[in-house]
Length: 295
Image (tube, rainbow, N blue to C red):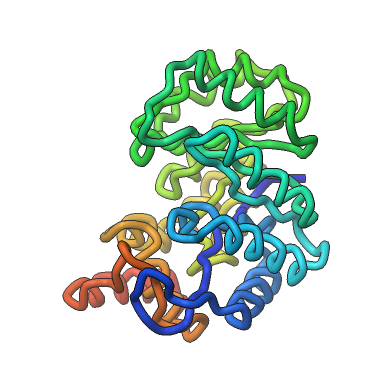
């Protein structure tokens, strides 16, 4: 059910750059249609790219509800519901279940740097509290917390924990995690630049930032890689290398939102402490977008 190119969709906002820049429901509906039309395999609402850190809990739950409504069952919806408070993660995960999401994505608790046992008990508590499929999310570059393969293996035995998003870019972990988990446990890349190799080595898909801007190409790349067609996957990936790199030229989702604005899909809106992209960086991202044939 959860495979291929799964976009970590941006949360559109009205034009502005303030602590409470208003959300833009109409543009969110347009983004959903853009992804459906371009074959995105699943939509992840309110992940990192969706500015989960700048939305309050009420807004967080509302955006999930809106994405579920706009998708209307056409592709799976995965809701970002992680937090560094176990209580808050349970609250957001319940919101997602009530909204009709198909699964939840829970980032490792950030800032407080739990032990591996703390990680195990955190995820186990959320899984036992809310009966919805749950995907672990390991991104130590943002959280200062690395969930080790052995911990993932332990958690894979919990009934409704169905997979992991690995954003370490360490391809050697694929085989290790596979060896520790059930055969049907889902392995998803969280690093666009290594996604081709991740899938060729047996991964199931990617939760992608690049797919915000080039959804059809990311879908096709995944289709080729899943059947082991290295040549076909490489041909597409070569057009996306600029996006893989330069969508992180400033903190995500700053460049992704600028690119979507350039494509006419959203307004120029973002919330503090994030800012609109530095003007001197625009040209390099334009070149990457042209390389990917999105402008």
